[in-house]
Image 1: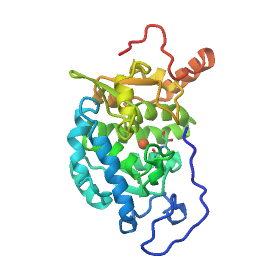
Image 2: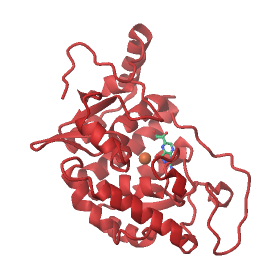
Image 3: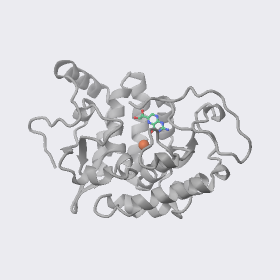
Length: 290
Ligand code: HBI
Ligand code: FE
């Protein structure tokens, strides 16, 4: 589970200066804040442009068609999009909108936003020295990685269903189990298509090296999607994944989140108690691999 950085000391900054990373003091009670688009420097926009160009050049044959089709909705690739303008397009398409946040936010706040079809997008961009890897999700990861698929109606419904499921998981103390589902689908999911495996997970799509690794590397395990199995599976935070789970369709994802998870959590907890959690990279006997 990613460490949540929500205890930042109050900071203030003058008009026009760049917002300090993670300015939680200026956030609202639901952790949303202003994007403060005018405060981005030309260096910020140039970094976004370079990140965008590097990813856009390697999508063919690796990223799913739905992502490639919707990517153009982000607008001109040479500057950080204005969230309000992008939200208008997104809202017309699937009823979602973008909410600026200062970075990672507590799970309850995160789930509440998703349940209301509001996607939290971090308002700061990484530093040039973090070009290849940034620990916390920045505006490039959230916008480039997550927002295009929110233009897909079925995936958009899955994301809201996930948020609603998260609010229930909080009351069942099952956030860690549900976080694994988010990790292995929304962040690092693969989909099987007639043209072969493609990435739909934001953590893959926004990563320079993981796009190829996830779809092509012989070092990675690619296993058929199985909800209970995913909830038993540990994941890695600061390296390429060793295991990826493959869905046949976004409808399969949405259908999987339809039932109430109370019984599923009990089943997963019983399996963890008797057979333990599954380390990343492990393939169980009889599992379908890709
Ligand atoms: N907050 N802003 C933000 N973005 C995330 O992706 C995020 C979060 N808080 C919690 C969280 N993700 C994970 O715990 C999810 O698995 C719930
Ligand atoms: Fe993410």
